[in-house]
Image 1: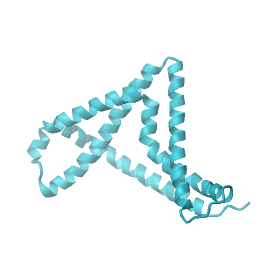
Image 2: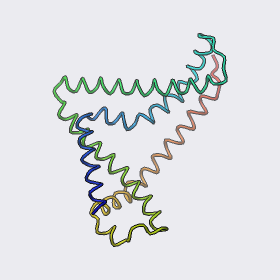
Image 3: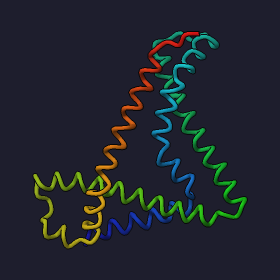
Amino acid sequence: MFLDIICLIAVIFAIIKGARDGFFISVVSFLSLFIGIIGALKFSNILKEFLMNSLGWESPSIPLLAFVLAFVLAVLAARFIAQLATKFVQAVFLGLFNRLFGAVFQILIVILVGSIFLSIFDEVNAIFKFVSQETLMNSTSYKIYVSLSESVLPSLYDLVKSLFSKSIDMIQDIKEPETI
């Protein structure tokens, strides 16, 4: 019962946040960490060269500074594009759909994160027995999360593995000097 109340509160919060932010802002907020990392990996070398050559900065911390600046700039650029898309959608009178899809997207995020947390909790609970299996099976939301995590998490694992291999390729591309 306690778990059901927590899940209900999380879903209500997701609906409010998604309706307030809209679909585009919700998606970019969720993906901004990935966008920032990929942008930083792609453009930090260029920014490092700019800082060293144009401004004459010489410091061992320049690569780290360039990475952080590229990360922040990539996240800000993604958010700016999302805000422009939101303004466009509102201009063509589709703001209601933007808010509706934003709420749905936020609910999906809550379900995904909840499934991951409950999967981890199941592993820990199997060892330490915090909550009895009978109590968990009496929870409606627990049953929903367990069935979703069994079907979604294998797909999520494959997606993360694919993104990781692509990130490694990008890192290797950055390390290789470009020939002009």
